[in-house]
Length: 244
Ligand SMILES: Cc1cc2nc3c(=O)[nH]c(=O)nc-3n(C[C@H](O)[C@H](O)[C@H](O)COP(=O)(O)OP(=O)(O)OC[C@H]3O[C@@H](n4cnc5c(N)ncnc54)[C@H](O)[C@@H]3O)c2cc1C
Ligand code: SF4
Image 1 (cartoon, protein in one colour):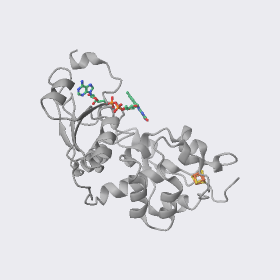
Image 2 (spheres, protein in one colour; image 1 turned 135 degrees about the vertical axis):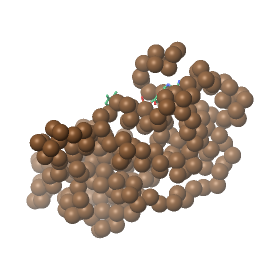
Image 3 (cartoon, protein in one colour; image 1 turned 180 degrees about the horizontal axis):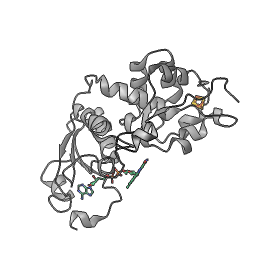
Image 4 (cartoon, rainbow, N blue to C red; image 1 turned 120 degrees about the vertical axis):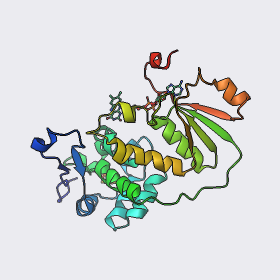
């Protein structure tokens, strides 16, 4: 299976300029480039890309909406399955996941799914929508850790009506997104901070400088602070920095 339109190259900082700064190297697609790249998708009946996406984003559907010029529709389709599209569009290993399974990749070049997701995610960050949330269901959940696992869990639960508080040991929210992945690959202010703002807009509360296991315990959260459940998303970092 081949496609007559070659994969649209993504713009990057000129190497001579990029050697002088720490800003993001990849500049992403503009609307024209994204629409052209979207037009390469075959809208497969049995999309292999969806099966290969860990969160099952309805990839051909969002690409179809984008192709039709409906960026908001594309953003809404992604939001059903993913809370962090601008981040995932940048740092997910798409080449071995969705794009690695795209049928066009067998004899040619896969659709640039990650770059399209990034384009739509960035549009949503620049055009935030008021969240339409269900009635609160009266249940409180504590989330330990504010890395991508904690952020995704917190936003999914908030969308289901849970009252969610995230407890983060460090002074900054974001886990490895803020202290591991470098700025030139994932901008902290322009992307991570805005994705965190969208989680906050869902009503999720954050408490930083709280080490669960020292400042508070899971038992005290459940027994004295009225939490009904605790999700532990503490990552795989060394525990010594938390003083265990
Ligand atoms: C340098 C580096 C680069 C990477 N680059 C990529 C990449 O390009 N693409 C990719 O897909 N993946 C990448 N990864 C992997 C990716 O970052 C991790 O898979 C991901 O961050 C795991 O998310 P998490 O939420 O489980 O954990 P983390 O991001 O580690 O977040 C855990 C959070 O829990 C907090 N915490 C821990 N213990 C407690 C406690 N007791 N109480 C309260 N809070 C606590 C921590 O402070 C932290 O903020 C990279 C990892 C590193 C280290
Ligand atoms: S496998 Fe490729 S061509 Fe088929 S729907 Fe997914 S992105 Fe489009």
